[in-house]
Image (cartoon, rainbow, N blue to C red; front, side):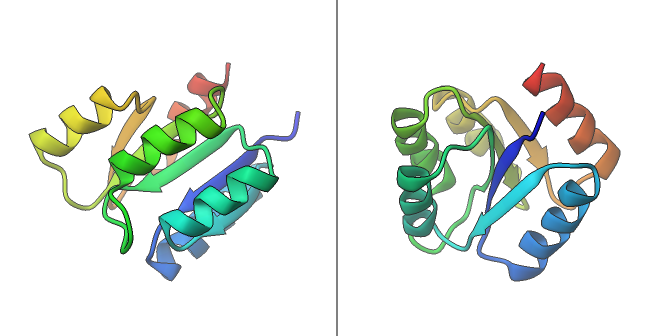
Length: 119
């Protein structure tokens, strides 16, 4: 089964690293550098997963969660953050994030979480 994944992060190095890791284990990956680009992509393509940075230049990741939930209700959404706070975690849960990963992330942990959530 091909798993279509969207990476939303303003840091190109993070997008490139995640793309490389996920493609190496068989995921089909597209990336967006901001919320507007991610929303446009979700209007034209279907995704199984979204990895969303909580701090984007144009929108909070938690707000993007809400928008993407409306556009693609079945998509699994994981917040990734370099700014872990109780407030960010609570907002992510309130907006129905399926997972929450702190940068720099542990790759096996991320892949295990994704595998568990897709099942």
